[in-house]
Image (cartoon, rainbow, N blue to C red; front, side, top):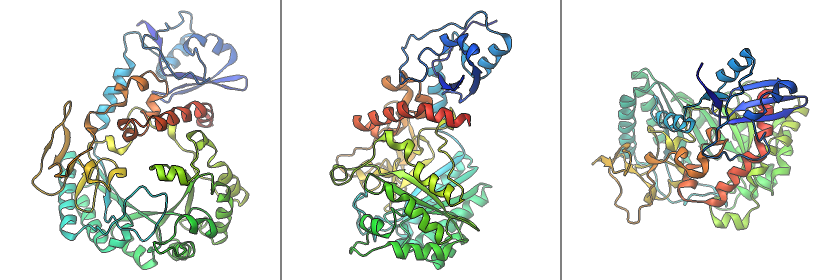
Length: 468
């Protein structure tokens, strides 16, 4: 029998008289009684008490007197691994393998213009629209990617600015991409991220006809709150207009309603839920989904003007909303499945070879947060197309680079969170994967510390919820 050791990714969470044994690399879960856990304590030295760090020379041999069935269960779940196994090397290799897959994702920025003036927006809005000529170059680029990846599915996020300001190009390009996908036997689906002001029933019918399966609209609270946070560029209110549009498209297309939360509006979520429920939007045929998200601070101006939540507040974001929905006899949202990413998923789409953000002028980006700044471009859909240099690994895109001075594009193709000294010693890293890679590459220590604090403060709750 091969010699075994404890996995460096073992966690134990108390659950009454029992213990929940969880392995963050395999997402395996075992529930054991106290007596059984006493025999396994050496494999779970720190419990789940916030000590996420594991020494590089961590080694705990498997107890020699383990019951055979229990030993087999621990091996199957990855709680016990061969002594010679380098678990970090497995994670590193799996992460690299996950970069290449036949499921393609593109975020297409159809315009940098917007009819709203949301003060917390990270983008720099300007009158810049994707032309039909650039849209054709985008189609050709995506078709080439489909062929090279032997695509099984294609997913498109229609993005902006406000993408419906350029709806004719959206509809034409979506129809072509739907056709290109069908020709190759790949499924096609797409989502429009819109502020909702232009989302009339006529527009929604056009979207449905070309394969758009879902729209996301943001409401930051009831009218008095939302209109302060998400006004038109001229300062006019927007809530009533959006609500009329949502009522008009109910049943036609799936709708996700997002609420960006900070300290200024989080207490108003129940009121918004009751209002939307009274309008019939959260029940019946194709009921709309309401969910909350932390307002992310992208600029120092936002930090000074707003009251952002801390990462450690995330576990409580859904509590008030879920309580309200339950009181209204409406289904609550699914729990965030952050423990289910496993080894086969990258931390974000920026890490995937065949995932790109494409700006209105055809610039290629790996992260949507950089779409307004061409210095962050890694290439272009327009010829001439040449390989982008990489010191360690070729970034697999047809890139012409940019002519802009002071480029600050990252070498996305070389980043691997399991090479990060800090992250590689963490028991949560298989799930967290280092957090936002852009923030890590730009050494935003405050954000990274907040990510670590989130896992420290949430791991017991997450494992408990995962256990059901």
